Each structure stands twice: as C-alpha cells, then as structure tokens.
Length: 272
Ligand SMILES: Nc1ncnc2c1ncn2[C@@H]1O[C@H](COP(=O)(O)OP(=O)(O)OP(=O)(O)O)[C@@H](O)[C@H]1O
Ligand SMILES: [Mg+2]
Image: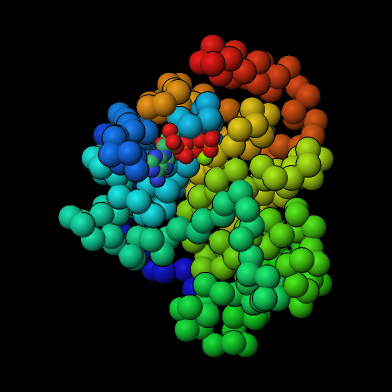
C-alpha cells in the first residue's frame, strides 16, 4: 500500500525540509497579516516534532503549509527531498506521503466508523473487501476494535479521535500531521491518548509533526520541540527531549522531565 518512492537521493535527505518560509494573509479589509516568517526547519525520518507557541503565532499555518493545503507566499517545502510546489502546481505524489488529523475528528456522521476510516481508500478506488479489511486492522491498531459498525455519535470523544487517527493512517503515510488532535478531550483521556499515540508512532515508524498548547503533552511526546515566537511566528527555540521510549506516566514525574516543562513554561510566559 505504501507508495514506493524512497529513492537513493531521498534516503539521505530530511523527511521534511522548510526553507525561508513566509506566509502573508490578505485580510477582508484589504490589509495584510504576516503570520510566519524566517522558518527554516529540517525534520528527520521517523522523528516526532511538536510545534508550540502563543495563540495566533502561526502553528496551524505552518502545519497547513506542510500538508500542502496552502502554498507559502515565500520559501520552499520539501517532502522526502522533493519540492512540494513547482511553480503554482502542487506535487500530489508528495501529498500522498501525508496523513492529516485535526482538533475535531471530522468524521462523517452518516458513515459507519469503518467507512469513515476507509474513505481515503475508497477515493483511491481500493475494492470494498480490501478496504474494510484494512479498516479492521486500523481499528485494532488505534484501540477501537469491535466498533467498526458503529456510528460516530455512538463513540466517545477519545474514540472518535482514535478513528480520525486511523483514517489518517489508512493510506500508510510516511508523515502524520496533527493539529491539536486532543485539544477537545478531558485531561485524563488526553494523557491516555498521548501514550496511545506514542505506541502507534513507534509501531508505524512514521514521522509526526504535532501542534499543541499543552506543555506537558509536548514534552511527553516530542523528540524535539519547536517553540515559535508570537506573531509573526519565527523559530524561537528548539528543545531536544532525549528521554527513552516508550515514555509512561512515571516518565512525566521525573525531575529531568519537570525541568524541561518549567523551562518551556518560562519561555512561553516571557512571550505573553
Ligand atoms: N485565512 C486567513 N486569513 C487571514 N488571516 C489568517 C488566516 N488564517 C490565519 N490567519 C492569521 O494568521 C495568524 C496565524 O494563525 P494560525 O491559525 O496559524 O495561528 P495558531 O498559532 O494556529 O493559533 P492558535 O494557537 O490560536 O490555534 C493569526 O493572526 C491569524 O489571525
Ligand atoms: Mg491553530
């Protein structure tokens, strides 16, 4: 299922490379907003990177640029060594490397869970039996086995988010982009989902870029945390989080973990 596109050249290049990114939006009043500027970042294959920063600093913008949903006003995006945009045209074979999950699970209420998960496969023309088989394997992977035939409204928020992650993984992407995927969940469910996401990531071996507002979530999940400055978002600090995997509830109580949490909090407080 995974598209065979790992060439000799791309094997040595970063999975995602952002160079000189800048994003300006036109406002309805006819003005301009500079949302992001001077973004240079290389993300290694298999790395877990978390973006954090004050509200409105351009995190969602940066993720949408990586997802190929918006074309940056300047700068370049490379996925596995290939430019995502050539002139005005997007390289859709690069987009196939990407799975995306947002804050709201955005499941279609009129489709069963298995149909929601298998939708990207349906759009690709994968036969029904094959895509339902894949959906079943994915429900097992994300921990909602047995709920394949249910409707989204019959699942809890955490389960719906698991289904959304399963859907994002359905095409076996090399890269998973997530914008505050657990932002709408209660604290306990969120902690559990963090452990689950780490497990899924370790099993899949994909590269993850995740946006969050939660400092402890960032430190728990990340190999590297990218802290953006207030708008216009610039690279402020990159923080390495070297703790071994899998991390668990105990990891979060360790002094080294707490020290990074405190440091990050101090940096964020200084921005407001
Ligand atoms: N389509 C748009 N048109 C005009 N301005 C926009 C558009 N999208 C975002 N912006 C502006 O760009 C800036 C960055 O927005 P973005 O949504 O990327 O921030 P964010 O860091 O994700 O914020 P939050 O943490 O609140 O989700 C904000 O000032 C926002 O108002
Ligand atoms: Mg956002």
